[in-house]
Length: 286
Image 1 (tube, rainbow, N blue to C red):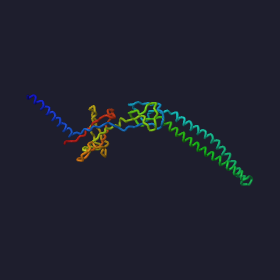
Image 2: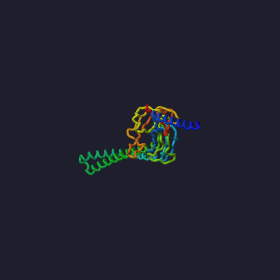
Image 3: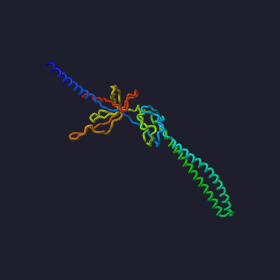
Image 4: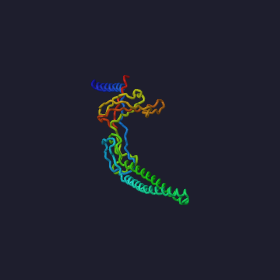
């Protein structure tokens, strides 16, 4: 009989001890559940076209300036060749037009002298001047045509350059948003890159405790494996994000939350985007 009474008593003591430990633990340390995140760099196409080659897979490490993908360049190569041909043709015509202008200028100068002495008629003088002005207009028009062709060729060269997509940062390919053979549009993502050296832990803090956290504070960050490392607060939201408990009875105020971010050393590449991480915030002696 005594043994039967002893077992419930032991259980009751254990529960009470656990409750007391939890109360003490909570009083001395606040455990925030956060997530590892970062800014993603979406590498997109600047032109429309079919993705001819995609050189990377998810998880590949890339360097700044590395070629990632190639869009079929034939259309833009044809544009470059077309405008280049127009420019060469206009340059050829310009040479002849300049020769015609020089001849028309000499003729006009002779007619002008003869007209000044009364040796020829005003009609002949006007014809020479009109011919000279027409030759000059032809030269001016061809110069503008050459400039336009060069501008179009330069534009086509730029578009041709857009058929090759390069990595803008050192990073890791997180996702492939397009596959080889697909038609992509301007602004459409091809791959998403992340910088493994620029990860941080994001956590939400109830307003009850936010006054205990400041920029530059260092807290312990515990990973799901149990490994711990130091994290430094580099961001604390100025405005509350959302309410964790909404007051529906109008008898108490909402409990709001603030976002904090901590940067951790990730040289060992233990952190990964999407990983759960726990932030231990000491609260001191109650």
